Each structure stands twice: as structure tokens, then as C-alpha cells.
Image (cartoon, rainbow, N blue to C red; front, side, top):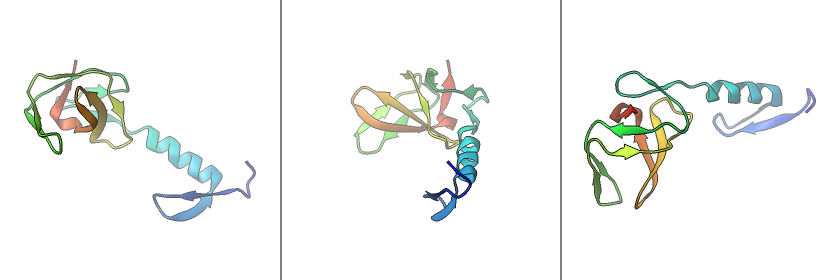
Amino acid sequence: MSDDDYVYDEDSGEWVPAAEAAANHRLAAQVEVRDAVGNVLADGDQVTLVKDLDVKGAGQTLKRGTLIKSIRLTGDAQEIDCRYDGIKGLVLRAEFVRKR
């Protein structure tokens, strides 16, 4: 890419220089996600729930102590993306999990 290249930034709704967009993307990737007790979480970690959680739309309750395998960070400091049997697209708040 040259200095004249611009890309559309969906977050701001503006056209920004490509170099600036790449720098913003790198900063967003460096978000530090911490669990309920302060441990830093990373992609692929296993976590357990520290509280019973009602899952909206699934009509199911995940009980305290439930093991969630292979989490993925979303770029948001408070949310993690994960899978659990029978629930697609499960997003949990980091404050309700503890790293294993």
C-alpha cells in the first residue's frame, strides 16, 4: 500500500489512511482481558464459571463450575467468545469466569 491509500473504518464511519487503520487494528488486538480473579486470558484457554448463568435464547442455565474449553478473545476487554454443547454463538462476560 502506498501513502495515498485509504480504507473505510467501520467503527468511525470515515475514510482513514491505510497506515493509520493498520496501527488502530494493532492497538485493538492488544486488549488485555482478565477473569474474575485478575488472571490474564488468552485465546485457547480453558475457563470455569464462577456463577450460575441463564443463557438467553437457549432456555438453559449454565451451572457454576461448568468447564468451557478453547475460548476466543473478541477484542472487547469484557467479552469472550466460546462454544458449549447445544449453544451456538455463546459470548460470556470475563467477570463470570475463572482461568483453569
